[in-house]
Image (cartoon, rainbow, N blue to C red; front, side, top):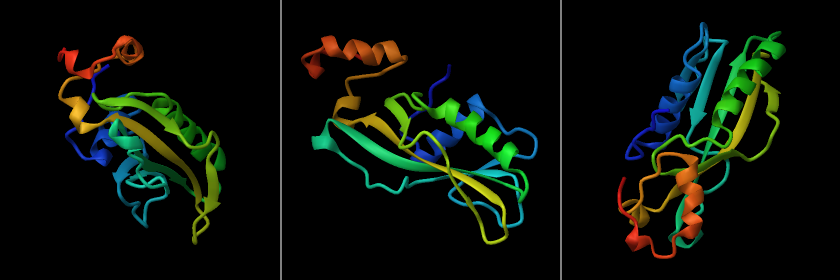
Length: 161
């Protein structure tokens, strides 16, 4: 699994992760920050998951983002399958090199129709990342690295991998 450089903006990190793990399947393009009006089948990622970022006293950053999957008016089953594919790729993932965890705020999609009747499925996400002060000393490659953090008492003793 290749990890993404977290010096990139959040949308770029999520976009690169999704394209590497799910890809642009036929007819389903991933857009950052918008969805084109003329296209029915598309996926959008947005920088807010409807909740403010939470710094938790500076030990990490809890950023939010939103994933939206949209399809044609009668394509509920198809949109649901694409949403699930995206959900499974992101849930409990490590999209970036300083990501600790990525989790959905809810386990089912928020379902609604847009003004032209297209099916939309949305999920709000939190991604927990190490604080910038700690990032200088820590470099996680796998979830095992994160779990081994329980044994560390002094962050200054960690060395970069």
